[in-house]
Structure formats: C-alpha cells, structure tokens
Amino acid sequence: RPIVNADLHLACRLAAGRVLLGQHRMTGKETAPIDVPIVDFWLTADLQDPTPVTVRIREKTDKLIRQADVICFPYGSFYSSLLANLLPQGVGDAVVAARCPKIYIPNLGHDPEQCGLSVAEQTARLLAALETGCVRSCRPEDLLRFVAVDSRGGRYDAPLDLAAVRRLGVEVLDLPLARDDNPAQADSRKVAELLLSLA
Image (tube, rainbow, N blue to C red; front, top):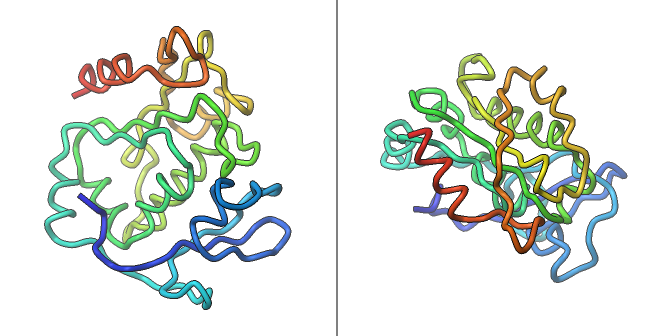
C-alpha cells in the first residue's frame, strides 16, 4: 500500500547548499552519485519548483500502521525509499500509537544516498524524520526500539558506531543477517526470521 496517493516529487538540499529536485538526481543511478551529504529533505509538487508541500496519510493507512504487529524500517535507498515514506503528516503519530516492536535494518552494502553516514547517524536521521511527523513530543523508544546489524558477517559502507546508537536510546541487535555468499547483501530468510521472532 503506498503511503499516499498524491503525485509528488522528492527534493533535497546538500551540505554544500545545492538543491536537487527529483529522486533520480539523488540515487546515483541516472546521474553521478552525490558527493556531499543530504542535510534536508522534503516533498514538492513540481520538478521546477522547490517549494515544500505537505500531504497527510489517508485514514486507512493510519489505521493499518497503528495495528501493525511489527514495524520494520528496511534497507534500501535511505532517503528515496525509506525516509520518503516518513514525510507525509501523520506517519510519526501512527508509529508512536502502534504498540509493537519497531526495528531499523540498515543497508549492508553501498547506498550512494547515505554518502558516508554511519549507522548511528542513519538512526539519528530516521528518528528525526519520525519526530517531525509527530504532533506531540514522544520518547525515542516509542518511534524505534531496535537497530539490527551483523557486525561479524556484514560488509557496511561506513562505520557502525554502535555505542552512539545506544546513546540515542535504541537497543542494538547484533546477529547474522548477511548472505553467506555476499556479505554486502541481507539474507531475506534471516531477516524474515528476525521479524517473525519480534512479532
């Protein structure tokens, strides 16, 4: 189910100040990969106009999030696949209201959008994106309870900095997640078993 049914675009501001309009300019697939971190990220209605727009999730989507058995923030393109789904209003509040485990599984391999972010920095940005979607203040553990990593078998593009993850109030689960034949990719069976064990 899509998080919203609106025809919108992604926009971001890089650390150097440049604004990029359109997901295709962030992913490093259709254009050269970004070479400085993304510092701000929002939705826009037009690829020619960077003006931010707001959109709210539908009531049915809100209800489904609140009734979840597990909420997983999965690996994939960090901004355009993961954080983009947290931009619509109401997502953060629905996540807080869901009384279930919430887990982030970072990319094991290379993601051009992350541009050197450690797992701790990714976790902080994930929490900030969720908090932005909350009307009332909330505790970090209401938004995210676990970060799952494979420090022994995985191949991460940037430092894990697990002590910093814990300082954010998030518990670290360090367990086998990587594929046996490719440590830069998660094993779907191992991930499924982890999620089922939390449900």
